[in-house]
Image (cartoon, rainbow, N blue to C red; front, side, top):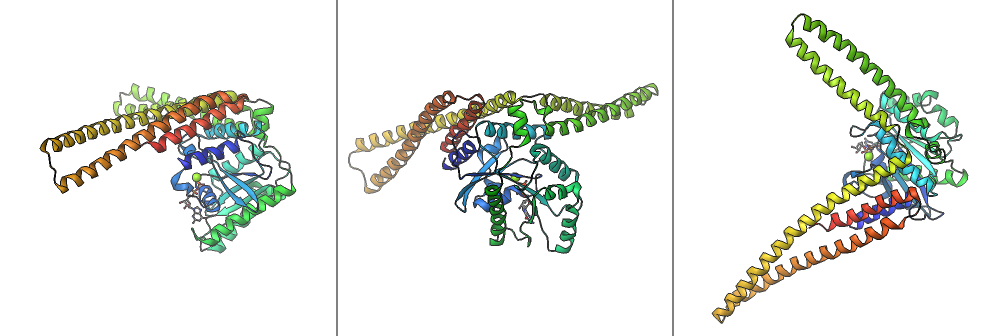
Length: 427
Ligand SMILES: Nc1nc2c(ncn2[C@@H]2O[C@H](COP(=O)(O)OP(=O)(O)O)[C@@H](O)[C@H]2O)c(=O)[nH]1
Ligand SMILES: [Mg+2]
């Protein structure tokens, strides 16, 4: 319960639902999935973020963690990478736009960005380039003084890693960002996980970001301006345009393939080669499925901030409903158990009274059973009480938020708290 509520409070701080302190720092942690973001955040905050997974990760993929550093409350925002197997890149951009948009609309500023890059990549892979390109498109800063790039996954073969690091300085990779003020770090250079060195290394990078943000005003992210001030749809933002371009290429490619396949099927049909036709048709079905997915992505590009928020809110409410259902079911089962226990206890007591004198052994057994029944009774009554309290809060908070964008977010975040509360009271 405490965990879920803390997590909710951190998301509420990032999205500006609760007013942050002037000394609070908000840093985005970016990079492809598997670059070590969650591990990094975990080392800074001392929390097990990779295993435990915050409540939000179930729904929205943004996790916020905080810790104190040099007199500041530092919020690290663990973002999803643009190479996630569970989510298309367009959905990922949607999630980022939803949260970053709400945050900006509610007056929160991002103070810095940490981009992680695994040095173990022996070449700049497609996913690495994609993540880099998306970061540049989303930020669009004139100065990158508030960007720290940290290479992770250093191995014992440090000369090979150092050679790769040199290649990263090329303008096509990190060179142009470094020329505009970004600083390159080696994180956990000795490669030992769970060591004090790793924590020190992570904190050194965060300290740099704090110092930079004290000396350089952070620019608003281009994505935030586009989605809130200019009210663009996802597909019209710079980052959306990058994705739309790729999507267009993929669709064209699929359509070409499909045409070729159809012609082949016709030809084979002509020759009555049934086995081959079946094979080709299977390929055709697969391509058609992929085209459908691409069409879904194309529609996603037409979403506005309002759509995104409504969607997010719906997702939260749906999740809450599911959790509530499970909770009420578990509660009913437990209540039934309690009833049975109470009945059998009453029967035992009645029986003992009828027989008159009871032995010491039976008395002590009865005492233990009474205690057991008591424990279950307390559990059930606490769960019922928590449920009533949280249901009352949902109503207040759902209706409490005024700002349109804040309200969508607030309801989502509050729902998370309620769901978290419920979730944790389930016996
Ligand atoms: N060798 C090494 N492994 C790491 C390092 N950082 C993270 N890992 C491992 O890489 C995997 C992916 O890390 P994770 O933090 O989940 O990446 P994320 O997807 O960016 O959040 C995990 O198994 C980590 O234990 C590092 O600096 N060195
Ligand atoms: Mg992660």
